[in-house]
Length: 322
Image 1 (cartoon, helix red, strand yellow):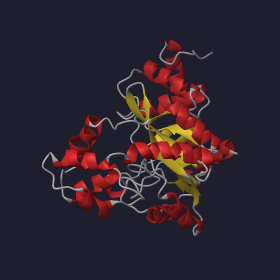
Image 2 (image 1 turned 135 degrees about the vertical axis):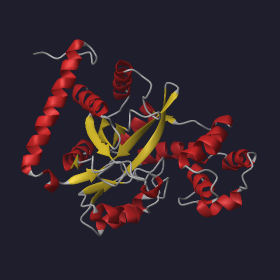
Image 3 (image 1 turned 135 degrees about the horizontal axis):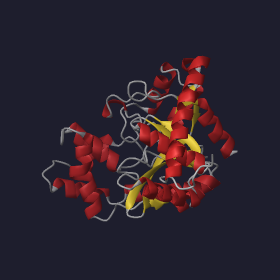
Image 4 (image 1 turned 180 degrees about the horizontal axis):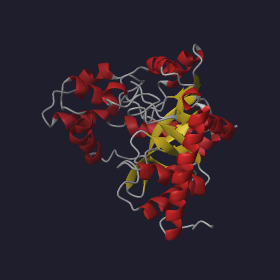
């Protein structure tokens, strides 16, 4: 029987059924081979260099404790923790690959893509990274002033001790606001204080996918779409619209897509698998681990052990990057 090329036609309901049935068969097969003995990985991880609570070195130590074969560090728009993580990984049997989660602008919405396997010392990477950082470090004093106008006791001097990377950015402000209990949830801190200030000042600019892809590809890396199902993603679009967006992103340089993610629904997983198969995307996956800033999400295993990301994904990235 021939599959339809249109995801949500009657033919595509057949595609979804095939993906689902194949998934069941595959899971049964690997269980008989000993799934628990497979080499597992995590390709979406955060540290104290952005909004996580584990240092880069602690992430690697935890990866070893969790029995992971390979891991990355994908802090938001920064590579500040990569050297520390790589050095820690070199002392263990955990393999490590460079990573960074990058915010990109796409048709009046913001997406997150995970850059993996790039050479951070290449000129091509340094060029695009400079642009990324300029967007994130600009006018921090003005953002702080806007937050102060809302009654928060804040200043550049008070925020400075909360800088974990090389320069002041929004995550330093976030950590300070957490320390003074500005809100009961981290997301509320962003929604109430940081994001409104950034938007009011017109500082909510990000790179676009095509430009980012050129830099990452020239640096030997790949780009994978993160959590397509979220607001910072393609949430709110129909499946047909999501497919069109993924196809366009792929045409502009997107290499892969997260096949496994901590809070995908079964339908999300089937859709991601269908897109990866149809557009020959690199499958990736990760827990989006944040430590104590995202309770219930564990490194490598997600929520209640609902993730098992095969080492093959890591090998595919290495081979693609050669």
